[in-house]
Length: 282
Length: 341
Ligand code: SF4
Image 1 (cartoon, chains in turn orange, cyan):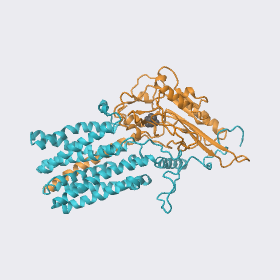
Image 2 (cartoon, protein in one colour):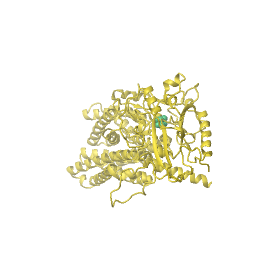
Image 3 (spheres, rainbow over the protein chains, first blue to last red):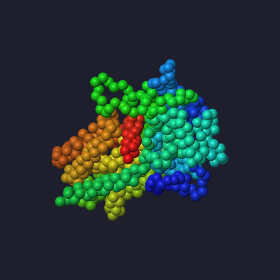
Image 4 (cartoon, rainbow over the protein chains, first blue to last red):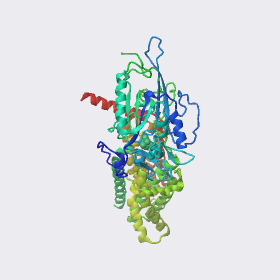
């Protein structure tokens, strides 16, 4: 777990087993199919209600129907709205595309937030998800710049970091997370990750057959830079259009190389002092 | 192609046909007239120009301050050990006292920056090599007591044997204290900090050596400060070279190191450090006042460099361009290779 520097992506990598759980349930995840999202924000509301998340300043952003702005310490689901008036259309020239997508913590297979946490507050659950223990977090904030998706954040009036727990309390008693439960179109689907991945492949095929060439899966591939995500998406445009990084890599992948460089530099510093000392003596 | 029952998507289905107006904005606002474009016009898309990454919740006073103080403390301890062994008591004492003060300041900064300072001992719950902050905590725990003891025995002139042992121990751990902080900031998704992970430890080692040399020059009599002057020169040159290599290799991601607040601080740091190092080798060899000025310039230079790197990092995570463009380029390269094979 903590000592697992070797991120060799030996498939199938199971994060719960890798974290030391001998017996554990199947890895659970979210599949967010944005092609059926209607932007009702029920997920945002349900998440706030269930997790008793404090209010965050509401304002007018001018970003279509999005007045939440993004994920943060007090917004664990965020619905993005993207207006795209088309360039070619039917005779009336009125074609218009309105993209909506509900974003969430990705519960990475190789989670940078968890790797860098110096207190052990962030941990891997038996469901393969990533959760913060609030009674341990001391607010060092290291996980915040470590997350390649900009998910986890510090609540300044509270001093600790917060993010989606995939409703760990609900999962424990066999309930689905609040957002998935409330989603009226099943844009947010919750379930065993392997099954969700198959379902997503099918849906992608269906859309491609219907002529939606822009449909693409995001985060489903265990071979990507974070080893695949526990929450993955079907998008209708490039990820960056939704504010997602196109090719995120877990920063700790390079950590062995970083430590090597640090060791070299430290040795060089020691040598430099020794040389100056010897030079001064002669 | 059938045109029935598509509700949510364009019919053409090609990825390269982009809709006219998309959720792109130009980060940084409109350019002033006559301003030259340093990079090709923004060829990337984003969600209303909003950052992909969260802002790093660290204050520059605490964390950039700590990067400076930790480097100063670590390198000073090593210099102190060398001065001790060579029989330069004044230089040794100055370096030990400086290291202890810098260590005190470091601890204050680190605890002050926590969201829950009262819980700082939670850092000692685990030992994690995947977390440079955890490793740093243990390095500091090993370094603190001998560094403190070395200073105490030097200032009070008591227990010379224990003092010698503590001095050597602190001197050996010192380089780790001065350089692990490079891994600390590189082990993040912040583009400038992460991508620079090869050179950053050398930038920090050089900067730490320059500042420790500066402190020795400033505080010790000129007759004893020879090793400090050499160390300052080596440090300044190492830092200069490493920063140059870093900027070259990073390409467009290095831009925040050259422009804006980070750029100003980096340039100032470079000027002060190089001036200080040159002055130390010339006028400061004889003249005490010049030595104080040279030492101060070196210290100020190291401080500016650390603040510069810190702010460049913040800038690179504020602007989605630095996250999206390199990743896009990487994907396109992989795709190109894939289709060729
Ligand atoms: S998306 Fe960010 S916060 Fe969520 S598990 Fe991955 S690194 Fe951690």
